[in-house]
Amino acid sequence: MTPEQQLLNLLGLAQRAGQLVTGEPMVLAAIKAGNIRFLWVANDMGASSKKKLTDKASFYHVPVSTAFSVAELSQATGRQRSALGVSNAGFAKKMQTLLDKMK
Image (cartoon, rainbow, N blue to C red):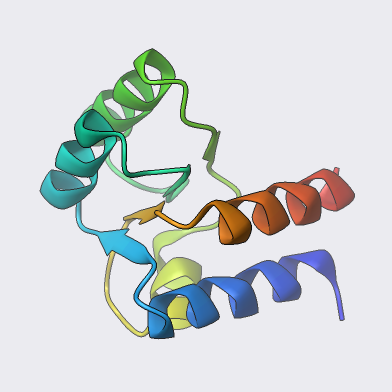
């Protein structure tokens, strides 16, 4: 299985485990509260929304990835979303190692 597929499967598992915060307003609030360990932003998301999320994540030192499109993120989680925040440190660490393998 490719690292990309493993990441998408892990996103689905995190969703089922209740460890994802979805939707732009909820993600922004969770970043401010310090509850997000890793942020997924769709690479085909609107420019202003993407900038808002990445700037907020940068300010609060939250790692960000734009490796997947809205369709890929939505299919992995079962929800039509363009921003996903991972709240569990274990999931976030595993996602980071898989992302490193993709490079």
